[in-house]
Image 1: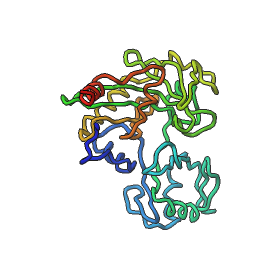
Image 2: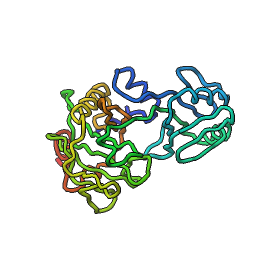
Image 3: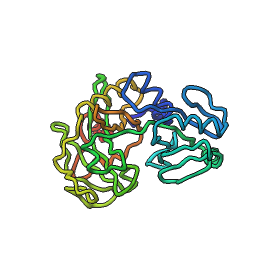
Image 4: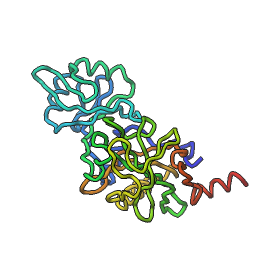
Length: 281
């Protein structure tokens, strides 16, 4: 209801999102290129589909390199390229292990989503206490008022579990609400499920009361981005926190509202409240 059907939702293609962020000079990790089938773009140049060209390109980049479907979500297909060896024509993936570059391209060709190659984020040291293998990101829910101002119905920190590379709540991760006055977290929770945690169940790091670094700057970054995308009234932004500040990872049109309402948290205010009143009238 908040996103008009004539505009649909924001493009979930992560390559196009990156181009949008860069055009607005928003802080975001570099995307080195993408491949789909045997075509794509590497380093700003069209990719020919040659396996050795891909290997040579990846060998010149700092490792690890994030690789994920450019149209996917929920952590599906996420992996890290940790090594590339032109001599053996092999890539080594953190989850997938060693794979010949030809076989790797065949896999990509069989997946309609394609892949992007993205700079790996080195998160703020304070957040590694929750998970050192996953980048623990803020999910910032924004709504755009008729005035052009941005509201924040809810903000959560997502945290990885165990040795997982992803922080997605739907893939077994944790979440905790962020207080918009102090930047402090409340107890962690799972979705679905009823378990709550004052400390991280794997690392033991305290969740309840932890103040997220650069939380104000993260909110400002999401607000600036949304103010330049007025066709959608409600969006969710994944924001990583580094030692230098926030980085915008991606935007989402479809966010799981029930997750934000866990532990008695309400989003029934501002734009959402006005919408509820209008539809209950």
